[in-house]
Image 1 (cartoon, one colour):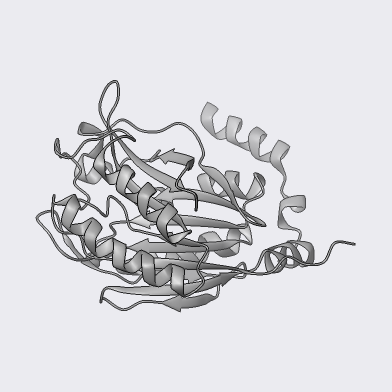
Image 2: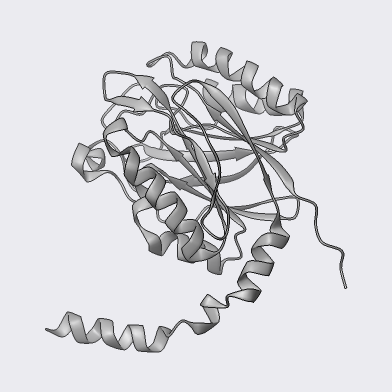
Length: 273
């Protein structure tokens, strides 16, 4: 029998962006990264489009992985020997994508995920193309998934991550103050539904798009809140224990008890009406 894996320390960086000035925001981020590494974190996670601020229609600061945002993050990861999860406006063919990227502790790119569910109330689809793939990566003993902001409202995505073996899903967000109650509700619900950790990293402050009040938080596999930030810039630390995920799933075998064949049949019945 294998000994249980040790918990992995994760850091949430609740940061306020310097609007459309990535160099200045990255200077702030470098301080956060150094502190997280010195505190023993294996990974530091930043909010949605943290270097620029999230903008549903912006044509500015669109870059590929050779641009200054990703290049600087790769440099900081290698210098501090820490994994970094950030996001940026990724250019390419067609419209840009709202993309999260994982950089390993050597500065290499280990995973990318483009936001699947674009935020139609703000017409995000006018400025971006959606992604169409999951974003899974490993961090020591952990299997990890990525989601971006509005993705949190879609339980199907999180179910797919759970089925892919995820112990934790990171949700990078620019979630506005007026819907903060939904943020807390969905993070705890997705954690309890899928018996895994859900770590939500939100921005804070006011910019031309909206007002944000932080509230970055993490929920454990039973849906209990482990830690929660206020509205100030800060770092949150969470120890993610894969053995807690495994034991919770053994004690409550929800996945085994699902009725997939019946669900598909019922779905066909309702579609035919």
